[in-house]
Image (cartoon, rainbow, N blue to C red; front, side, top):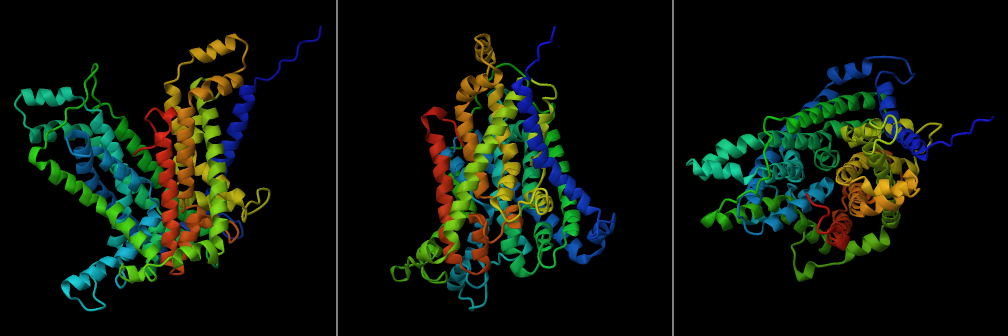
Length: 563
């Protein structure tokens, strides 16, 4: 009797395919990065690359400057975010929703665009704030009040767009503290300040530290802001130094060696943050609790609201105003008046500058393609892993989340080393950018799907299986429609992440594959700040339109993209 041939389970085949894709996306770039870091140009094993990082002042100084900027930016973000989160989450502050919306706006604003805006505001000669300062204080033409092209200026600008990370962690922690603890403190005679000092702060201290670590990590690995503000002053951070090692003559081995310490620090910081947020000692354990009782500010309500608006001056109001002003006046140094209004920059971007149309098309294609692929892979990985359908299901989430520990500039170096030679010769095509965006945005997409999958009961899938559906049919016909809210939100988050990415993109683009973020950087390099402002505002409009659309879709039930 001939034994029946068992048909392979499609779920296992899908698992294998997704696992291979994730290995190619994540493991190969890091493997090549490690190999290049310990070899020379001839392929011989050597430790000279790492020795040069320590011995050569040209490599050592950027590391010191990077640490100074990262620490200053993280502390600044923490100092701003902690009182802001407390006012929004625990008090009767007026227009709390408006403040949260403004924080969300600063969160989705590309940091490199914020750096350009602060260049318009605080450049020593032409900066708007320095022009106001000269008029107000009667200074000479070459005197200035602020200078953004300094270590302090770079740290300040990074902090403006890193504080939402601290705010998010803080606000979530404060929202989860039950009202019972506050009421117990008041019953025992504790005032508002005493309750804040003895109850609230100890409970949220791990969240404060974890959020500050995230801000530190953002400042450590960012490329756009120091490239725009530090390079004109002649100093490097570690990310800009790695980028410079790919200029003529290229030094990929030294660049790989410089990228690995950044990867190790990122892994360490993320592990420390996970330990802080996972500690049991500060978790409130108990039954069902009511929502937190909001502290009445009384006479301080409106001063507190004005304080929040003052904070939002720096990431939102002043930068956006500077971009608008630069976009609509003939020369960026002109005062804003009817006589100086001009559409010349818009005309330049639309009709004269040849790179605009190609960059927009490339950005759109890459955004749509990356968002679609990431959403599909995240859905499959989340389904296979959460339902534990195949052997080795624990491996998939690890691979999907691994890129969260890889800074953009490090991933860019790894992808450059992998895809500039056979058999994967993708450099100079949109394919290498698609791979980069899929890899970098995979953790964000998987986190969204994983969180939603936990709340989805398996009963409907089991019913479909009883009626003869395969697992893949159940995923397509039952699970995916139930997760349509998450799928749309995930797609939108990935799309926004793609159009604002610069760190990896700057290493992987060529003249034929530029995207909007790189064109903005190039326009800044050539001094076309007015045209840059037009393109930057277009980028912001697209981003906010997507956020608004996703948050207002009826099927989202009030949920969507938020900080």
